[in-house]
Image (cartoon, rainbow, N blue to C red; front, side, top):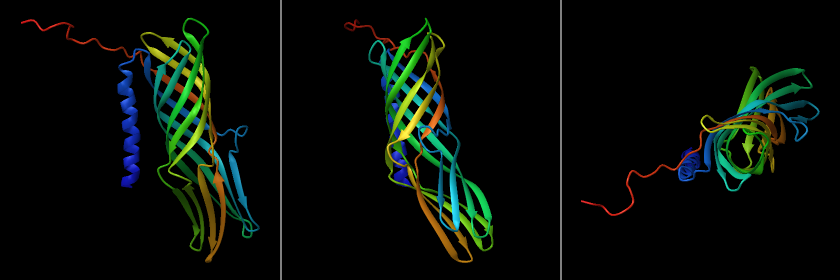
Length: 252
């Protein structure tokens, strides 16, 4: 537990260090974002079924969320770099069926992670205040722990699901497109969509059906791909503050 908290602390510390650095750049912006996460069958499987002759279990992706902060640094007329840190919660519903006894059960299972995206942003000015944004890049992901859920169907019957992270750190691909309304005094308002595609399954999963001391176990992998609706707000441009001390020698 100490090891996990230390890694999370270092993630947070590095993020706030980036924020402090933006104060020295007049073309840097700090923002916040919220993303509802939705299933996306056209870029990845939102359901996974494990089945044998006597036991079947199905993982179905439910609505999740991503919440965090963003730093944008402009490096060209129409190019910027975006990074930050986000908490991502993927929610699944696990349905169990005992095929030989027709016993059924259902329970949710959530996978929480923290990510640092590094995206290259391209934007095109459409009107005086409206811009079209597209971005692409990798994301470094921290998976803090394994997860599990269990249902006691009765005194002699148990259904259980467990997710084990494949590694503490993993990588994913980000792709974003949206529109941004920019004002000088009130900041930037962004609405768009994102696709997140892990380079490998994020968790190995196992489901178990136990009845009268006899166990049935199945194995698979959660891909973790999702589509999101993105809401972002960037605060007004951070200007470098002038020093209260004037240049030149000190006069007495």
